Length: 529
Ligand code: HEM
Ligand code: SF4
Ligand code: SF4
Image (cartoon, rainbow, N blue to C red; front, side, top):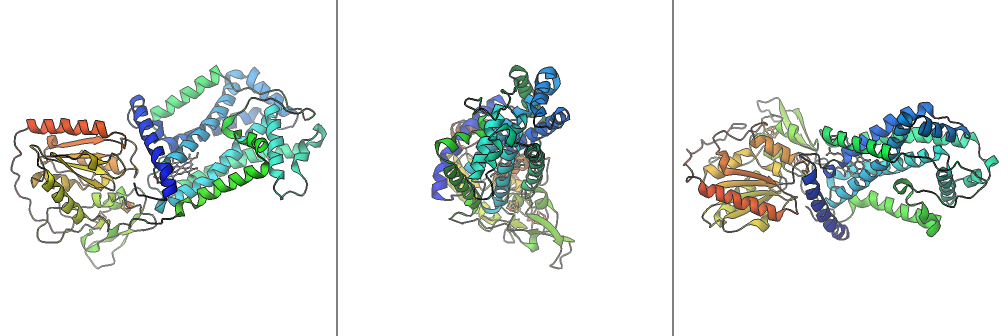
């Protein structure tokens, strides 16, 4: 992980480790890609759809009059408990869950340092989502018009009255029953419908700069969460408190900490202090992507003389940073790849996809059609040779890892030398062939982020598919599969990864000595494999 701001970095490290342990634990409970911590964004979306669906049903029975609202909610909760009542509970609990998933999502993205550089857009467009989600939830509580709504109404208006923006204090609306009119209530209903719609629009924008964005969780996870919410709705239905009565002061209420958890602070501190804290938090969130140091790894570069316009880099780039455009160099291909440096996160996945990332070259310099200037394909070949020279043990393993997962350099020894890449998806499959065919090692061990949690979204998926011959560029059939091992491991998995490597070494020891592989033909032509 790239080093960022030292203060934020000191916060990130323990958080990252805590997430790594929690992810490991949840991986035991949730099979495959179902781990909720890998699906926080998609779960947020899923909660949104539950809230929207149940909200539409509730609106059919909701009476918008100031005096009738409470009774209509009571009717739904008690008389039609089996449907409207359950819908109400689902509406409440899914809204709470959306806040929870969002908060964990923000903290996880922050801990992973995924808010800077080209990722600033996803981070910044998250900020209005936070505001809109709270506006949606708080105005929803208001509509029930019970004691909790009364508390929220009084505290919110007092809080806003601190700002010198309203001519007359809006809290005056809630002084006596006579001072409140239907218009204020209609405004809340309008906000409770408009804010979620705008929220959905902002979520759509939030996903605009990543390719193949997922907005649906895996089906099994979605079913499991739905069942859990339904069970909660039946066991502990959401109910109203006593009806609002502006002639009495609210002294005790049951609280919802997800949406109004900060309200007591207005009394403990003051409205001004809470505004100050919110402004500080909001501004910090907004400027975080641009906090010094502003070091940013160089974006991928295209070398036209090695690009045949095959589009593989476009297909594999997780951040939509590569596009094709008409050829500009007169070569006999229609299209050429072009990189938008503002979108590129320097993961190197594109160079893992390029057919020109072919290490078996003798006559010409090794250059790929697309590669990272700070870590070229020629650098990779050089580092592999250097790593291979360090191995002195009875069995020789090259361990290829990723900078964002388990630290492979900690796992080296007489039998193991390591090379770490910006992402496991940067490894072109011909390099595995090359390591074994050229006798650089007896086996290749590939590791990277835990299954389903790739730091660069698709690096691990593409690496798996290329090795399993499901995705171009395929690993050649002739490569002995028993000499390749894969284990996806996070930063907290050093020990288990070490054990897996040791097991692999044992398996390699039991194999007959590697067969001499016929030397590969010299491949210099663009796109040849
Ligand atoms: C409930 C509200 C939110 C939902 C439903 C949501 C959903 C998502 C989804 C679905 C993704 C894409 C995941 C993928 O396909 O890889 C994503 C990415 C991201 N989100 Fe959110 N998000 C929410 C709020 C926020 C907030 C408030 C922030 C930060 C202030 C934030 C920061 C990010 C970042 C930085 C990424 C990009 C990660 C990357 O570059 O791979 N999100 N979000
Ligand atoms: S390094 Fe390549 S794959 Fe990664 S974001 Fe940049 S262009 Fe896309
Ligand atoms: S040859 Fe390489 S750089 Fe050119 S389009 Fe194909 S993958 Fe991209």
